[in-house]
Image (cartoon, rainbow, N blue to C red):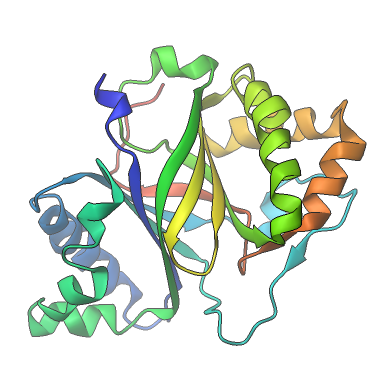
Length: 250
């Protein structure tokens, strides 16, 4: 199936200055991303703006940890995701090699990014949610995503694997508003794992996921796993799609 082909993801988080931001976004959406999609192996690309934290209902019990390592770039207001058949597409050429070959104007625009951080990840597992049957955009990432990226002690990884496999992802397969959920494993970048949820809209995410987390019947197990993870700056981001737009509603 077409939806089974996009197992490699190149994810970039970054911030932008206010001055020149509109010019950058116009270039990204009109020149850079259409250019990427002409490259061999690239299947889709999607660009997101993270929602402000005060607009995101979250469960408040438990404790989430974020890395304070100064070597880890802290950008997170924009998220760019490209999909390919596998991660080798992003190894030949590497993102930095691809960017070095851009025209001067393109390199100037990329230099505007602040706190840029990237991961190349392979999809390890996937479930489809109730809205997948009505989703008309195929492999394209949804209008709203929640993207958590993190690492943990190796001693805690088996418990996290079991929690996602036995509880979280099966729950997402039944959650109204959910199109897909993907568990990712890194081949390059600070975060070693990620979880990517796809929703029909920010409102659907805010209502249904928040209700699910408030009623979590495995709260003790959930809190234990949450405390074992060290998140990237800004993780877990909730973001709305800027490009391609307008999107086809589910």
